[in-house]
Length: 155
Image (tube, rainbow, N blue to C red; front, top):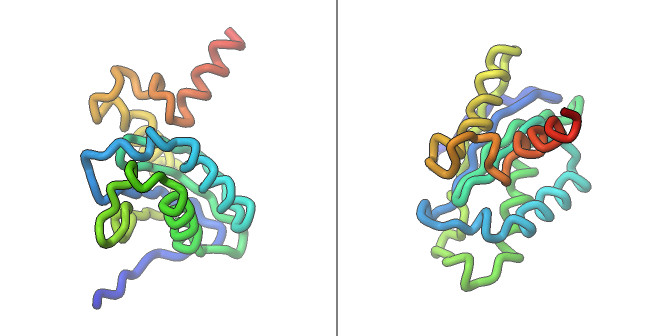
């Protein structure tokens, strides 16, 4: 069995990509309220800051900053994924033998401001890159959509 080595920096800022097993599914957006609640429950139990996030039909990308002295992002993802899986209607989940989520996720330790900016742009532009909208900031399941709406109120 492979042993995955992850950079573990307490209080670090990380970029994550997490995917569903079925790359054609739209479960994450069709069940967005369950996903949001899963994240809320996890943050109550194991706090972390969400710097940016985008939820695509079959994947999510997020940047998190963990609390000082804490580097256990795997525990948080395990709780988010399991909570979501338990509450998605069985007909919607199209559960494979191994569950609805891909077994692992991709993580990247943010090293500096330039690295942070690159990953923020990736999150902002992901919906447009997938052909879901022309401008990634128009995607309703993105932290950038909320920012755009707030800027429009001020203008």
